[in-house]
Image: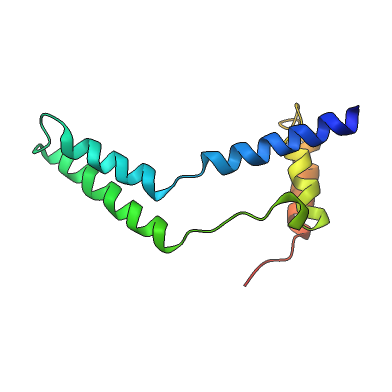
Length: 108
């Protein structure tokens, strides 16, 4: 039962992270909202709309997809497990996660 609950907790945290990622649609919606305000000609709304449009464009050009848990190596998986524990903020889990992070080969 403990393995099942651990797996479900890990799956929940991974899916929550994927859903929380910003998308270009979010920035485009925010830009539209600033442009549709009653005082949309105000400099603050103009600047915010422009900033969101730039962010929407940038996020389209460099979209990345996080690897699934099964595609991660053993250190990445261990790091995710330590970071998703109920007491992940405890020193021992933070220390273990950091040790695993150091063992992950750097890309590129």
